[in-house]
Each structure stands twice: as structure tokens, then as C-alpha cells.
Amino acid sequence: MTDFPILPKNKIKRKPDRGHYDKETIYQILDEGLICHVGLIQDNSPLVIPMNYARQGDTILLHGAPGSRLLQAIKNGAEACVTVTLVDDLVLARSVLHHSMNYRSVVFFGRGTLVEEYNQKKEAFKTIVDHIIPGRWDDARQPSDKEIKQTYVVAIPINEASAKIRGGPVVDEEEDYALPVWAGLLPLGLNPAEPVSDERLDKNIQLPAYIKNYTRGNKT
Image 1 (cartoon, rainbow, N blue to C red):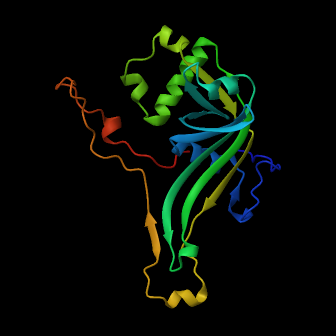
Image 2 (cartoon, helix red, strand yellow):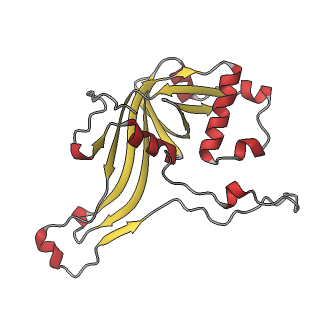
Image 3 (cartoon, one colour):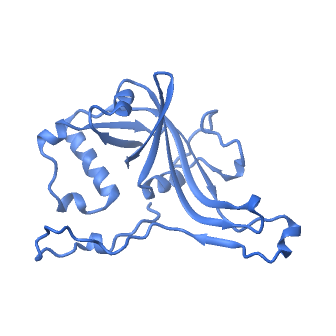
């Protein structure tokens, strides 16, 4: 995989040593995340909307109702800023000033286009569903022609992209290491709880393995 060019928009300016511009790192973060925040300027005001998404090659796919003002703006050529952040640890220092988080984040900029060709649009739906929970598309009822036509899908190319990663231990002022305060990392993760069956579920339907064994982690 090649690196993204370092340009004024995607260049990491604060703590540049935490910056990454290679596709492998950036795409691993995007593939692990579930929610992105999409920001743009509309009518001279900022607009940021959280959305689920999926990566398809070198693009991010978003879907929603045709009335969505964000999708309408992207369809009409507005430039978007897309961010995804994963929090791995709370970094608890002896000094509150040095509390931090270990995180992995991606920011990229691009102008999207409306996906209109039927087969491409249906494939986009599959990509989004299987990004959220692999195996679900082949198990659940797939969208009808009417449902596909009533839903917008936009594809935003991942152009000017960068990742920023903070990992590692607590960093305190030297004189604070003697303080009688617990310090260290509190790891966080997305861990599914016990699935709750729908009250109208047929009792003969067993829990699928892809739900029973669901996990969220780094993907290549």
C-alpha cells in the first residue's frame, strides 16, 4: 500500500511524531470503527453528523434518506471532512494535567458522489451491513428494489488522509512520580454483552455463530 501525500489539510501539526500517512494504518482504523463524524459547511454554518459507514476500497460509503441535508450537500459537491476515533485506554497520570487517552484516529477530506447504478448501490448496502456485522447480509432479508430506490448512497474518496495515534504509558513530571497516587492505564474496548432475542422471535431459531462470536478488532 502507498502513503497518502502530506498536504496542508492532512498534515499533523501538533505532536507530528504521532502522525501516520500509510494506507495500512489508516484503513485498519477505518475498518475497526463503527461510527464516523462527517463535517461540512452548509449555508455558511458548520454541520457535523455521526453516521455509520463502511470502507470499499479507497472510498467511504454513507447511506440515508434522500431528505438528509448532509447527503444532499455531498451529492451537490460539498467537500466533507470525515473523522473516526477509537479509544484504547484512559491514561491516568499522577497529575490531572497529564491525564490523557491512548487513541487511534483518522481524518480525511473529499468530495463525494451519489451512487446511482443499481448493482453498485446494492453492493454498497452489502458492504455497509457486513462492515457492521459480518455475515448478516446473507442471513437477513435483503432490501427490495423499492427500498434501494428510496435510499441514498454516497461514496467519498479517501484522498487527503492521515492518522494520529497515541499509545504508551503515563508521562508525569519527574517530581510527581513520588506522589501516593495510583497511575496507569485503564484499557477500554467494545465488548458485546449477551444477545437479547426479539420477543416475537420463533423459539426454533438459533443464535447465529456470527452473532455469538462477534468481536471488534483490527482488520487487515
